Length: 170
Image (cartoon, rainbow, N blue to C red; front, side, top):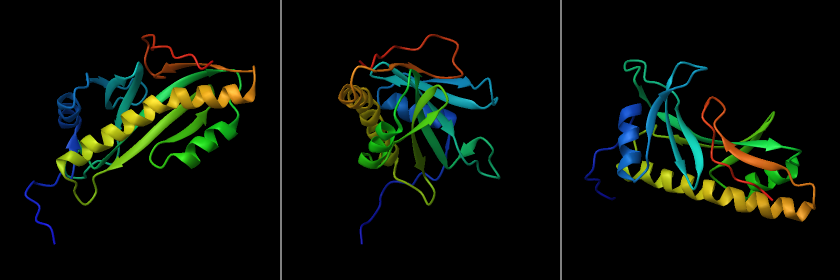
């Protein structure tokens, strides 16, 4: 049996999660989602904007939640074959792609149910960062295999009015 000397994290607030990301070197802003009127975190890696959305809230503490979702959105112009999406999902264990009309979403859920060590959240952030950085090369390679009908993809956050960084998949 291993002794645990650190206190387990069983929930976070948007502010405490922001602090964790900032301590890992990310610029993070706390914004209100215009569609749902909830506080979300917004950051970026490798030129891609991403959001962190709270999940299940504690009944007794509405500002705390026990899970959250990383999400990054690509605006797809043209057709994206579902085989490309399904192959990503078959090859990657943690993050998954899904097609939403007009968009390709990369999402990853993180749960703290039962308690996790503080480094667990940083490790999940590292996994997320790796997935985001692997996405464009993956799409580029897969779409080049399909031939010249290559759609253009731009990184976007659907609720964000500001222009998102662009990543061409060609």
